[in-house]
Every structure is written in C-alpha cells, then in structure tokens.
Image: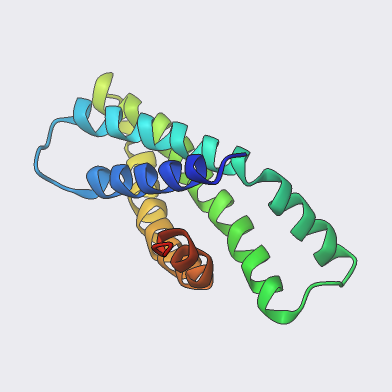
Length: 141
C-alpha cells in the first residue's frame, strides 16, 4: 500500500482520537460520530499494516524476533485488543445514552477506561516506532 496513504490514515486517526477525548460538548451524538470515524480509521490502519503484523506474529512464534521486535509485536496485539474493547464497549454504551437503559451504563465505564488505556499505549507504540515516524516526516533534500 502507498506510504502516503498510511501516513494520512495515521494522522487522521490521531486527530480523531484527540477529538473523541475532548470534552467541548456533552453531546453524545458528537462523540458517537467522532468515535465511528475513529473506528473506521482503526480498521483501515490494521488492514494497511496486516502483512507486517502477520509477519511479526509468525516470526515471534518461530522465535526469530529480537527482544525489541517482540515488544513491538506484543504492543501491536495489545493495542488491537484494547481498542477492540473500547470500540465494542462504546457500541454497547450507546444503549445507555440513546435508549436510557441503566443496566448498560457499565459499558460506558469500560469504554472510558479502555479508551484512556489505549491512548497511553498508543504513545508507547509511537515511541517504539519513532525511527519510522521520523523517516515519514523527514524532509527530502
């Protein structure tokens, strides 16, 4: 896939994650819209990086990764799990907002915790890929 496409998706995903965490409005419709866009970008991001992820998982199972790449692989898998929990619980939390179902409010709490954990681990993920990120934004002479 085109490098510029990956960069664009990553930047958009970062922007929408920040938007979803901002509290400029208590309007759930805004949060649902931003969360839906973020979810779609997350799916595209995983799809664009699927070959690298599969290769890393395969190499990890065969014990061919160095320690640094083992941590990158684990972090990538953890991020997929934590954001899947955030997305799933966010979808289930809609019931507590839209349909006023009190018993579904637990999903709102799970969504809040998992999304904030996800942001923390995104920062770690970005630090792990700092060399690659620098190469993306490096100005060619």
